[in-house]
Length: 532
Image 1 (tube, rainbow, N blue to C red):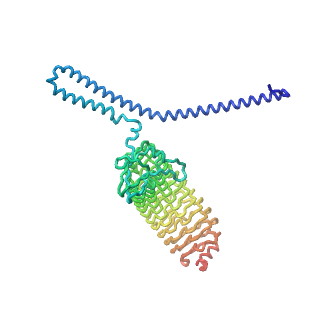
Image 2 (cartoon, rainbow, N blue to C red):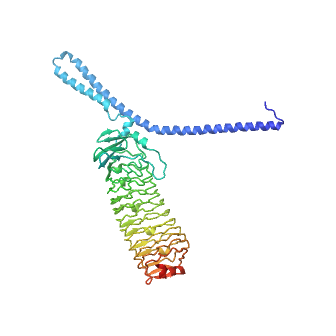
Image 3 (tube, rainbow, N blue to C red):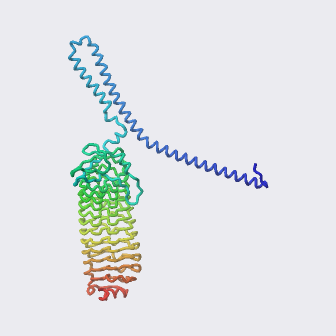
């Protein structure tokens, strides 16, 4: 028994002991509650998971009961026929021929009953039910003997997103058939001789993630998805990316994309693909990323995106970039972009597009518009540009560069107060005659203006009186090769850098009226020695 010098010490010790016991009991109680919650969640998950299985089993049981009822009906018929045979046994000689025919019929009926029991397609295991119409037909063109080709891809690492190793899952759940004969290989096939090879990929379970499934399958020329079950798909990004010889995709409208969030690089670099049918059936209401979705589809001429719901899309970076043959994007005017942050290179180098209707674009959240229309050399009109809300845009670098067919640009609604970069924004617009609203640009935060109007050969007037350049570090080539410039208003320009020697290069200074207060700019503009 513990001894204490004073009564207070004893009481204090007892209190501490009681507190320790209470704290231990509280922890045990909390742990018990946590375990009860976890077990409850597990029970709910298990119940939900197997409820569907139970429904399927009930359905199969009902079908089986119906078939057994049919069997019993046939058995009763056999019983009655045999009873008649016994009644006519005394007349066997006279009825011999009849009995032989009757026996044949009986044998046929019995055989049908056995077949009904053993081969009835409706009485299948759950796995067999899932196998029903769950396959992809693929055709590959092989030009070299003994060459190993990629049939499908295990790779799952895309961008910086978390992933898992698909190899084991695919090997367990995909069966391969060559000319309807099952073969024991994984995703690499070695052809003994050149030719066209047709494969069937049969799935033993539904796949949720088929991202990068055909990525870099360079020998793939044809895909048929008509019999592929896809109710649970969540990820199809990079599905056909870099299938450089893919010419046709059938059954694309069979894909259920209702739960899909990622479509980036879905068809990127499919160089031989001339048309993509079935896109009008895509459900895209949950898609957040369409970056590079059709990029580098050089032979693609037409896209029907009428039913695309883009209300959740964050990035359109490079969506149509380098689609050199594309001349129409149906449904673009219906795009909802209220959540979009990035438009970088969205239409870059679409050299056959003549008109773009972006009148429904809501750009209030946009951060970047780098190269958005750059290289659209045949683009004559951008409908709805004057409605753009650019209050959050940081960079306009090369936004309209090399749009050599544009004559007028209306940027009157552009809010540039948060912009920091305007490099080459209008560079190479050789036929541009007017930039409406440029006189309202607020440039207090802009750091880079190099090559901004370079090679705008037909511009005759630039009123940049609203420009404040206190933070600009680079003016190189800003007005270079503006050969027909007659008026240049730089009233509020200030130079804080010496790297400006090509700023006014090849301007006809005798015909161009310069309005400026900064003496340094005057010196650079008029001094032949500095200019050269």
